[in-house]
Image 1: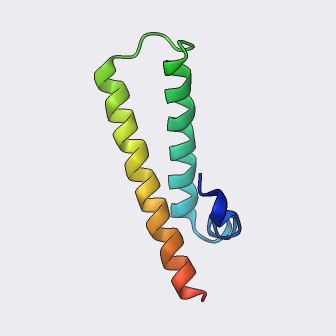
Image 2: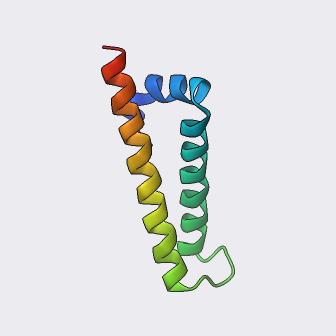
Length: 75
């Protein structure tokens, strides 16, 4: 996620516990969704999959906002 901001992400994960938590939650959801879509997880209700996708997107939006804020503050 956010490969173009790799350096900023690294710094934020070191400096900001909230960003680190959001980033890790996003990655966990990404892994769970991949496994579910590949059939590697016990049956997950389609509604639960949609909820997980929305949560993942929300976490990504939050992380992106924090990256942009960091970038503006350090320009």
